Image (cartoon, rainbow, N blue to C red; front, side, top):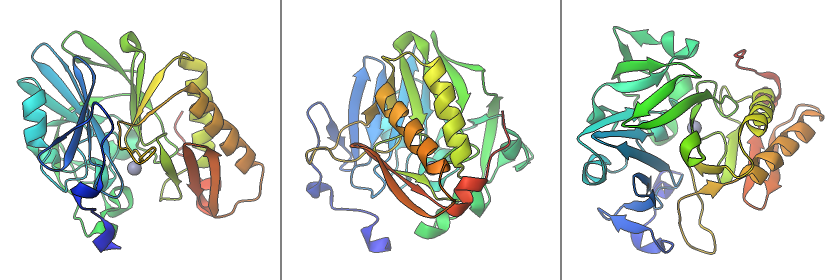
Length: 284
Ligand SMILES: [Zn+2]
């Protein structure tokens, strides 16, 4: 499987408005001060988000680590860049130590692994063995709890705990721009609810919560993409995709626990395991 981790970059075709940088990263401006940074030649097609205002930038997820993301961020970001990983899976923590003390979600399972102000996720949280990656140790600069606001210049992003894919997942809601940075809760392609800690009951509960709290015209930006008509673009979903996911998970949970996959809609399908039927983060 390792030889398939990367494709040759010249096999990738970018959509209009997406620019190749450093012969690896796909860069797209979502607006004047928000940049999506993708890795379309990496098999998981990760996308990280650089949110800027004034002298500040926030990098939500630091990518796969297959190439250094720091130069791209330096080119597009502001003097002060803080990184905030959405969760501890290996493909969201690449190059994390290029960004100094990071912001961490103030969740019990992350506090439990803190040592001397630093985090080093255990393999069951990091899952890097599949790509022979050791977990990094990184210093935490600040902890932000679900419901807290993260300020980036004059911009305000609210931390939302979104277990389902993983118990430590958080997303960011920027009401002023009507944008929800979903990370791995929902994205284009195969949704992973078959990994350790994934929970279909949590997926359902958080879908219901988001459907209640987000406006119907919300723009959902995602941490993984897939080519559409052969073109790689920043992955964006909408309210109808949340509805489809809610319905697919609810239908699944009426069945007996099993391992498999089901289509969600034309943009997503869901992988699940017996364990994901039964587990819950226990968080409210
Ligand atoms: Zn993940």
